[in-house]
Amino acid sequence: MTEQNTTGAVPEAVATPEAVATPDAAGTVEPAPAPGPQDAVPAEAPQAPAPKDRRRLFALLRWTAAVAVFGAVGSGVAYGIAQPERTDVPGLSTKDDGRWVYPDLAKPTLPPGAALPFAEDNRDGIHYAGLTELLLPAPRGSKPDSTLKLEKDSVVSVDTFLEEYDPTAREKMKQGFTDDGLRQIVARGWTMPDGTRTRIYLLRFHASGFVDAFKGCGGAMNLNGVKRIVADTEWAKAKRAQSGASNGEVTVHEESAPFGDEQIRAGCVQSGDIQAVILQTRKGQVAALPLHQAVILQHQLLG
Image (cartoon, rainbow, N blue to C red):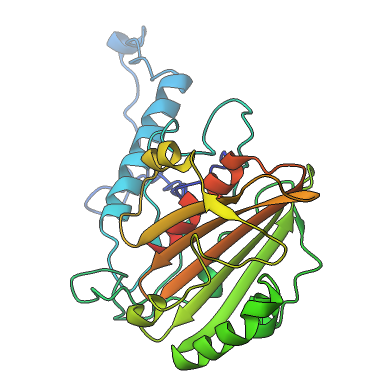
């Protein structure tokens, strides 16, 4: 079993070919000649490589082949998330510092002939993969959020999504979805043992220009039960660790004190025709690091 991480898909090991005996040109095997006097003392056989050395050699060959295979992958097939150094991305620390452990991530397979988001022939950033396949998976140790009203294939209705917002803002936002070309919303939610609840929504529009009209994310987002939301002051340091995605726009926000029984943090990722809204709540205060981690990874999946 490979070690799980939070960024790149671990390449599968490539089997090394076994040695195959081949017959002579006539297709037969000649019997060995009878030993003569000079063969009374057999010559010393060459030393075989130590088992440990062979394992290292085979491992090197497997990884070399895997790198060559991944280097040849192009549009229209599965494409992996680049794996930076462990210290560069939240979630890869070797010690427990509050980061969550996610499954290995890989971007989904595209339909044949489809362009990658933000490729030369797709500068509008259209995502041709299934929307559900672009959702960040839940981390290890989490439980599905049973309060999230999911339909088939993780689809949520507009009304379900708007429950995250103040009732006074819902009617206007719903009309905006009709006017601005909203196509679909999917979601995933989970709760961690410490009580942190995460909901990730992906909204797909007809084109990136329609995403610009969405006002449900950012400093003016009118979330349900939240009096005031401000920019996350710790995000400036965290975003320097971001790797594997350079397209789109990312902002992170937090509910300012004083707040009620629980605090909320929000991450917004605008990537081509998709808008991601990531919300985390917890009684007391929400730690900044898990949200930063989720935002970075979701941006990588979309970018």
